[in-house]
Length: 314
Ligand SMILES: Nc1ncnc2c1ncn2[C@@H]1O[C@H](COP(=O)(O)OP(=O)(O)OP(=O)(O)O)[C@@H](O)[C@H]1O
Ligand SMILES: [Mg+2]
Ligand SMILES: [Zn+2]
Image (cartoon, rainbow, N blue to C red; front, side, top):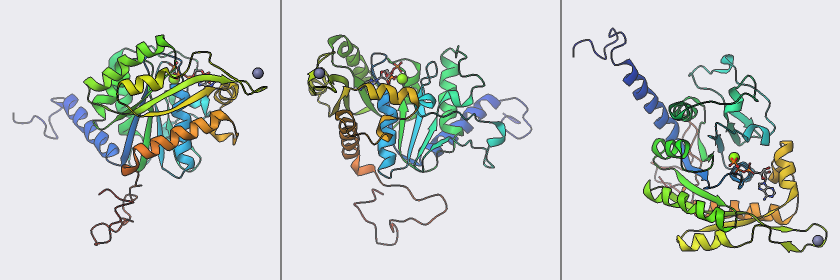
C-alpha cells in the first residue's frame, strides 16, 4: 500500500515496525552471546536464584564473560543477593541507545527489575504481556556486549517468563534445579517435559538442599532426603550436574549480598558449587570461546588460515 511503511506513513504499521525493530535488536544482542542458560524449577524456593548467582559468579571467576538476567519480575532477588543498590537513570543511556547493566567485578554483568525501580519494596503487578515485554527489553536494550554465558534466573514453574525466554532465545538451554523430596521431583518433571515440548536442550539437573552437613560433627542429616534429583536426571537421561548441601552460610551469603562463592570459604557447599560450575563448563565446552570484541580483529586467526579449533568453533 502506498505510504505504508514509508517515512511519512504516520502511525500506519508503526506497532509492527517497532516489534520488527526490537526483534532485530534482540537478535543482534543474542548473536554476541555464546551460551544462554535458563535456570528453572517446578517448585518455588528450591534455590534457582542461589544457583544462578553462584554459577554466574563461578564462571566469571574462571575468566568467562558472563551476564546474569533476573526474569523473576515478581520476586527479583538478584540485586539483593549481590548487594547492588544502584538505580538505572535515563542519563545512563549510552550513545548507541543501549543501557549499561550493573557490573560485578570485571566479568559479570547483571540485570534485574529492581535495578530500575524507584522503591524496591513496590510490588510488580503485571499481567503476562508486560512480563514478556520486559524480558524482550532486557535482551534488546541492555549493553551485554560479547558474553560466553548468559544465565537467566526464572521464577518457578512453566509460566510466562520461561515460555518467553524459550520463544525469544531459540538456542536457550536449561538447567533444572530441584530439592530431593518426592513432592519437588513431581513438579520438576513438569519442567523437564516443558523443555521437551519446546525442544529446549537441558544442560542438566542440580539437586540443591541435598542433606545438611553438621558443622559440629560433620555428620550428614538428610532433611529433604537425598539422591532424588540424581535419579530423576537418570530417568530422563540427563546429565546430573551436582548436589549442593544445605549450609547456613549460603543463606547468610544471599541475605548479606555476598554470593557464597565469593566468600573464599572452604566447605562442602563451596566444593559442591564448584563441581556444578565444572560440569556446566564441561557440558558446554565446545561453545566456550570468547567472541572478539566488536570492531577488533578476530583473535583466533579465523579466515587467515590459523584457526585454533580448541578455542574456536567458527
Ligand atoms: N544450599 C543451600 N543451603 C542453605 N540455604 C540455601 C541453599 N540454597 C538456597 N538457600 C536459601 O534458600 C532460600 C531460597 O533460595 P532461592 O531464593 O535461591 O530459591 P528460588 O528457587 O530462587 O526461590 P523462588 O522460587 O522464590 O525464586 C534463600 O534464602 C537461600 O539463601
Ligand atoms: Mg528466585
Ligand atoms: Zn552434629
